Amino acid sequence: MFDYKIHITPDDYIHELEEKDCKDYLFIAPVGETLNNEMSDVYYQENAFVPYHEHSKGYETFAIDRGSVEVTINGKRAIAEAGDMIHIEPYMSHGFRFLEEGTIWREMFLGMDMYGGILEKQLIDRSCPEKLQDDAFMAGYRLKHHTRRLGEPEPEVVPKEGMPQIRPKGKSIAHFAFDGIVCNQKVGRHETGGVKEVWEFVMDKGVCVEWDALHPDWDLYVVKEGRVEVSVLGRTFVANARDILHIPPYTGYSMKILDDQTVVHAYNVKALGLRLAEIVEKKLETGPDLAKRWDEVRDIFRQNKSCITKISRA
Figure 1: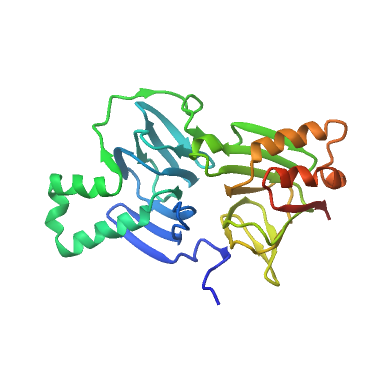
Figure 2 (figure 1 turned 45 degrees about the horizontal axis):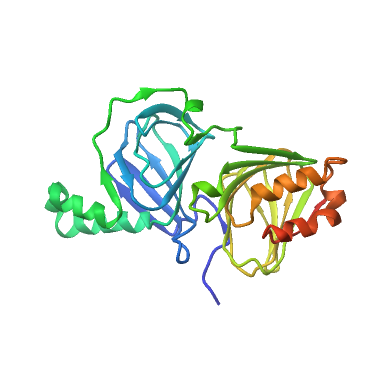
């Protein structure tokens, strides 16, 4: 049978790397032609930094699980804190300084084999470490990985709300509230080259969601707060805060919310989520209880490429 892990706890990393000022723990290697769903945790030392640079391809989504980070993007600087999310697109100049010891920086990449590049750098260090000090050689190495170092500007300091690439905790670029389910769009399809969307769902205890077995993509979730009971492939388990759920294609599954105000991030939404939420919101204007009116809206989900087959309340 296939060798993959669906329920991934923070201790279930598949590879570990130690660098001079941080430790990297890889949970999911890049998936498919789009190099999607790569996810890892990086634990940074105080004042560790990532130099100012840009990528010519690929998208980066970062979630701060602990600590605070000085973020510089396109000549502006702000402080992001635990619970905030940051989204970087190609040719967006960016650099980071980690302000607290043990800051946890959860990374998710699309269209770039970031961990593979870090591994390659360690191979250089093992075989020919002097090359790491060779500016021309390292410029070629970065070019191979679609990266270019930049001279850091004197930044304009702004509040994080004034930097659109930072999505503060509790904020979103689109917001919808249904009975028992709040839907916050954190990253739009227009920000990922049309590949996907990233959503935050805040759900009440007892909400149950089921997906059929025909979804063609690897679904990726992170439980941010609370607990979720998951049933998949004949087994049931509880996912806790910071746990990752990586559901294989063509695999039916369900989630039941165990605590009020449970927060789940969905990182690989291939459904047309924004359009779907707008249509459903309009449909439910006369009565917002989605679970009780599921038969009325099921077809809307299918028309917008969602593989959710049922939403109910226990």
